Length: 254
Ligand SMILES: [Zn+2]
Image 1 (cartoon, rainbow, N blue to C red):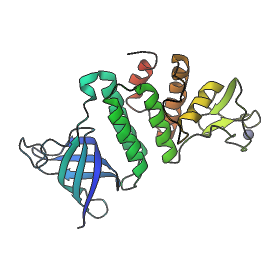
Image 2: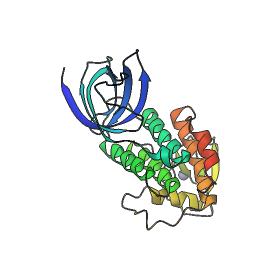
Image 3: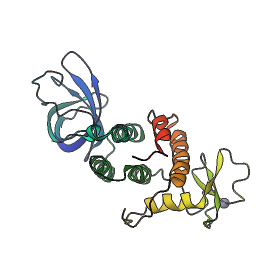
Image 4: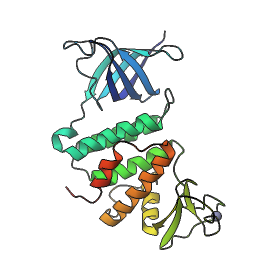
């Protein structure tokens, strides 16, 4: 059994026995891994309460073959997720990140850049950041890094460049914007404002700085939430648990 080290975010903790847990971690070097943490539920256990949801840890684990759970041997806490102390919406936004990392990634498939943006976003939730815009940015860039970003500038059917008009047809199943020819006969097509498509595009430009971006208006935020949530539902084949809460949040200001 090889011993491996990495930084990792705790994305799920399930009690396994009176003293042990099964933890799902999103690690910087190995992607999502599930591991047995023996003694984690003991008060003075070997992990010293490092294994709380959304904590950032330095972990050591013994790699098991094929289907068996890895064995977590060490977890040193680097940062606890403290957003809960600030307000509930920031805590729930954190839960949603954990949910997306669990459902969008495969076990043992490394995505170090995705780890980085998730870690940065969780850190920003602990600050005074404008988290609603940052959450859209995280969702869209997670999709980009995993190869699931919808086509936003060219027709997903024929590749023709789509001019940014007032309204643009967006195919939820087709996975992007559609020209007037290609939208014929397509199912699950919605009409989206050109401003929303332009904002989504801007959020996925890798060098765009948050400061340069125009502030997100409630109208654009509401429409973008609808498009993105429905697209994610189609992609995952189910509705993420946190979506209902997110829909209710879109128009609120803190
Ligand atoms: Zn087309």
